[in-house]
Length: 142
Image (cartoon, rainbow, N blue to C red; front, side, top):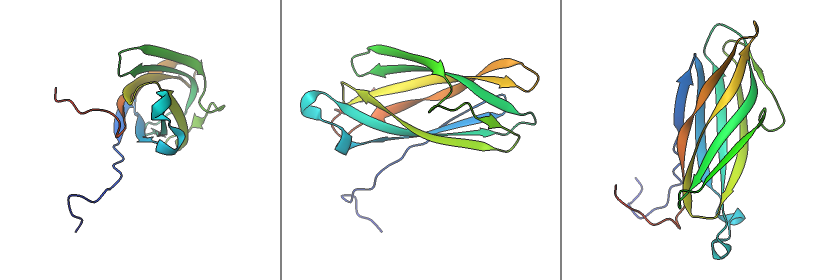
């Protein structure tokens, strides 16, 4: 049994399901890629997209809304993810890891993926809002 002072890296998982497509996100702070003295904090996040439905779908676009601890919003839109536009048959998953820098020690991200069915129907799926936390962020109780 670990004592209360031992450090265990917590990897929270966030999840959303839209039209039987599940998106899970696991963010993690990367101190080795960060420079707090320069107001540069870096996170990696791993996303798993699983088609739990009965029709084949393809991820075509992404739209991110990234907010830092000062409330500054940055929007990112583009084709696919990590240079791919994966096709997911029923039961298939696609996983990728990407990263994001912020000028503050905490923030959050939320977004959506633009999908299309084999029949050409376009729809958006939610990327759950997830927290970007580092040990440099002060804790507040809301």
